Length: 108
Length: 116
Image (cartoon, rainbow over all chains, first blue to last red):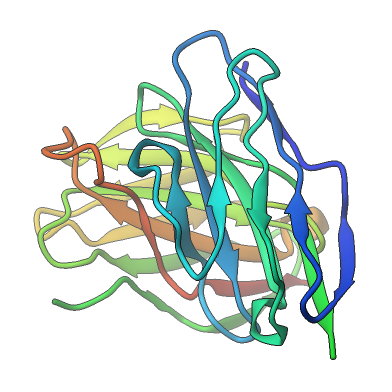
C-alpha cells in the first residue's frame, strides 16, 4: 500500500527566509505527486503537481525517485504563505493518499 | 463553471444514529471521491464513485456507503455512528478517465460531523 510521510507537523520561519517542507513516499508504481494547500477558512486546493514542473506562488517541488521524495521549496517565505500543506500521491486508480500535513507559519 | 458544493456545513448526531452527507460535483466532472479528515490529520480516502458505481474503497467498514446519481451528485451515508466518526468529511470531483495529465481532483468545503 502507498504511504506519504511529512515528518514535520509544524514549520515556523521568518519572512524572507527559505522554506523547505519535506515529503517522502512509498509506492510500487510510477508515482504522480501533488502539493495541496489549505489557507485559513478556505477549502483544500491544488498548489502544484510534479508533472507540470511549474512554479506556483514562488514554490517549486522536484520529484526525486531515487530518494522517494517530493520536497516543497520556496527561497523567500511571505506571511501569506502561512497555511497547511499536504503532500499527496495519486495512484493509477485516481485515488489520493495524503500525508499528515505540515503547518507553515511565517512570522513577520 | 461551478465548484464543488457540500451540504450541510455542520451536523451534530448522537452515537448509533445514521447520517447522510451530500455533494454536488464540479460542472463536467463524472467522478466523486469522499475523504474523512480527523482533527490534526490529513484526509483519508473512503471511496470513489464513477458512473454510479463504487470504483475503489479505502480502509473503512461497510457502514460507510455511498451513492452517485445520474447528474453526478453524490451522497455519503454512515450507519450506526460512533464517536470516532466525528470528523470533517470532504468530497472531491474529477474527470475520469483523464483527458489530460493536468486533470486532478477539486475539493468541496467539507461537512463537519460531530457525534455525541
